[in-house]
Image 1: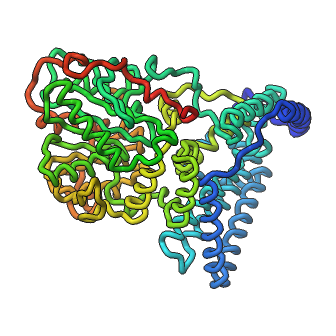
Image 2: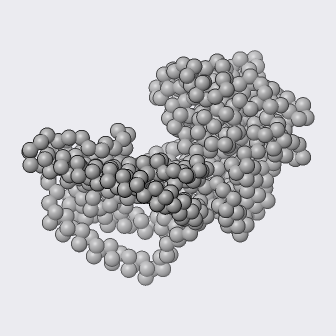
Image 3: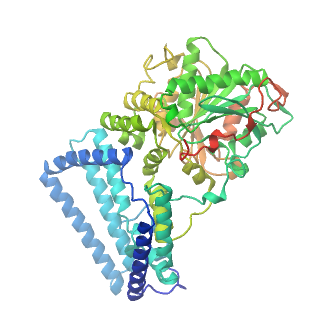
Length: 601
């Protein structure tokens, strides 16, 4: 029920406050323009590709609709019938002639409408009208005939973006939380929100980049990415961190970690309570972490195979120098896992057996169903992206962030729009969102190869489909044990696609499905007692068969992996300290590469 202690929302008071705020905002805007404020930037390869893809999809959709006038009339009649029933229920409830009845329901997890004020009759009617209309739109896309799967997927994605943008929660006049805050603060929430907007536009160089967290609450190397260690090796693409042990004895085989370079490695080392690196050390592993550079135009020609040579292959040589151990176990996260498995196939061709087991977190090898990211993948969009990258030498981090944020627009765009600009609040400190905002660029050559060969043509799954340093890559030649983790709500690496890739290597593979999504499902320490995971000892032909046979377990998947890897980690030896070897210490962890922002060249 609405908060009984809150004053009622009086329309006259609301309008008076809004008029006063509008005058003050107009003055602030003029001051900003007089001060040389940069005009908004509305271009970018992601937004341009969205516009082109949307126009194409709408043209096909319109043809489908008008090809069947009877179906269109029937759909319109259904929509108006829904409006009529909704209005009848609302009027009946207001007049007391009939009890309130449930109309179209938003999802229980929809945070936009959780506030008590949304239950007030007027705003409940607005909410239900919105839910009815958005559901109707999505139903039309789902039921449209003569659409190929790719066009239907693209159209559904853009329709969701359109529906999310038009939510009544995103507008002052139709969001009761914002109206109440406006009255109670005398409009100060909107003034503060406008200042936030100007600051975000200035920080983004004219591009709106809403703050997701309090950036001043964290400092890399101080209270985030702060596990003690040393940088013991570096080249043009990466620094190699050796972490200090926390146990007297460690497993003989070190652990090499290949993180994604789409973001920074410290998603695995946020804070002590949720640091995967810290947990590995507690289990008795010698952990070596690759920290990728944030590339500028000088690294535009760095290719996917350069990432292999200067990444995991260079790290293997450095690890042998650091602790005299040739054999390692390896972990790869997201695109880091894709690179790791590609590297294993490359090594298999020459009989290089230094890596004894491989674990991947949310990594794709089979890109036939890439989820919503597939919306941005076709020849025209990739060609346009390559044209943009040719000028800069890289894909800008802001463009990458836009694409990923659109996958969860309500959580990663509109929630901050409402909180920061309409409610005028500062975002709360959140380590994961601090990491998410610390984005990186992609070198032009590498990113073009990755998009074309993995996403567009799906060649990695084919024997000899891609060639690295002159070696045809065949994943079936990988015979070492592999452990694949996917997450059930992953929008970036859909779990069924991860499963399809898990069946490509030729060795013994264990597949585990975790609850939650791409980050929270992986970074899930056992002490948190969150989510669940599923295991199955076999690897049947389809993901659905695996799911039918899988057993559910409460909590984190980390203990299952601990048992699996422990049998492959070698015996115990005395702990190894960074710097006690042929490799000199270059600097303290987390190093300098991770501190490079996308505003530095």
